[in-house]
Length: 137
Image 1 (spheres, one colour):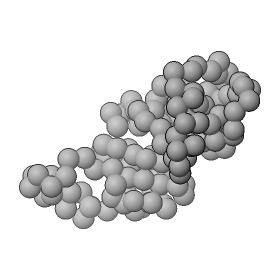
Image 2 (tube, rainbow, N blue to C red):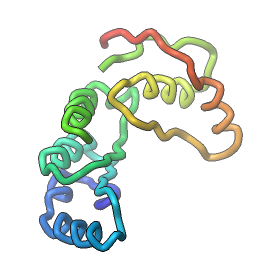
Image 3 (cartoon, rainbow, N blue to C red):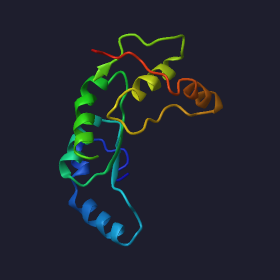
């Protein structure tokens, strides 16, 4: 993830990053260029996609920012690199519901959620394989 924690789009457009990464890739030191972001994740993801250099992105995506992130995630998936849940079922903790909501997005390859301890892990495992009925927001 370079940069890790990008806060604005210009950080993912540095030519020096691409040149250095290509040298490291040829030397067998790295395989994929990625970016992570919690601040302005839609803007950072858009800028990273537009460079054509990034292969992986780990960005903040949740029920709060899902509305403005959805299109950028779709475009990132289409380039190789929403549905909103009106009512989340069951008597689950909020982080588990959010995790289940994110798992339903067909444009995501992976979801990282609260894994602070064994209880968080067990909570997340409790929704493995469950499906939600998602409706447009």
